[in-house]
Image (cartoon, rainbow, N blue to C red; front, side):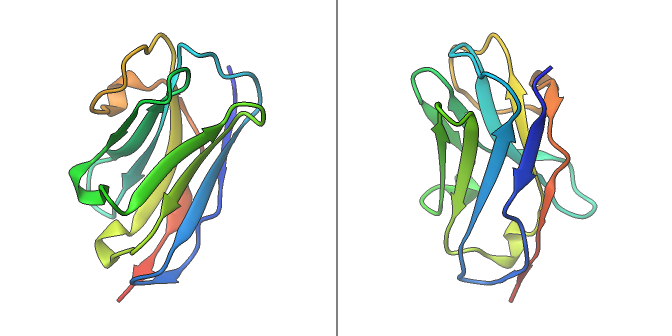
Length: 126
């Protein structure tokens, strides 16, 4: 199983930006979907943004549309999440995850993704 390692988290003030990275230890097939989830304290993990690795179609949760951008570098097996105009409600642990046999990028559910990174913390202060 490919290992996923997130980086780029850290404290930021509201209105600021961060870029998260997720380095995969092996090849990501075009049939995979990869995404970013977040979990705020006391809340369930939710899908934030996802990308179909082959055709690069994307999904964004309504709460981040227009502020977050997901992208990938196929040569480097790396997934990114550019987060702009951050808000305190964006605070949480951000997880990278992958899902095999995913040809259509749609709304993300945690149970559909079977490979997870360890998470990176993003505290946003007001």
